[in-house]
Amino acid sequence: MKFWAGLVIGILALPVLAFLCVYFGYVPIATAAPPFPFERRMASMALKARIARSKPMQPGVPANEENLMAGARLYREYCAMCHGVPSQPKTPIALGMYPPPPQLFQGHGVTDDPVSDTYWKVTNGIRLTGMPAFIALSDTERWQISQMLATADKLPTAVSAYLAQAPAAK
Image: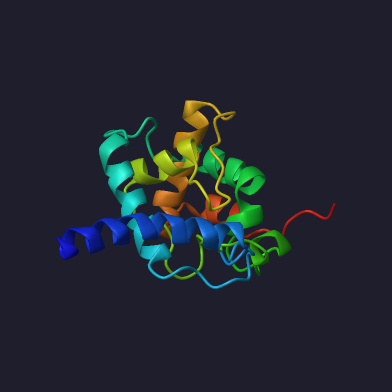
């Protein structure tokens, strides 16, 4: 009997303790705060499972030079401020985000991700990361960005040169 009473109290105590931590401001929500234990792992597991369950199976556009250049133009306009361009430092926006947005042309990018995974992320966004859903872009435009990123390690010279240009002064 004591075991069952302890189990019930333990099960009820966890949500109450979690609520009190949130209510009294002990939850680290600032972008500079360290992550919760297991936060990255849990978010990564949930994201991978959701993408696997609902991503499209076939790319919506071929990875030809026309689509790759269109994807590069769209990327520079909508994505580069957070995810960077080749040979350029992180932008002030990217420096202030948590979790930090991956710099897709430096280190581990998305070229090893299936194009449909990237398309899913561009289309749906990722909750609690700052990654919005680009639903204002057409389906074709989202596929063009995704194809360009999936082939970023083997882009045609003209596309690579366009991406590597310094941003225009505003």
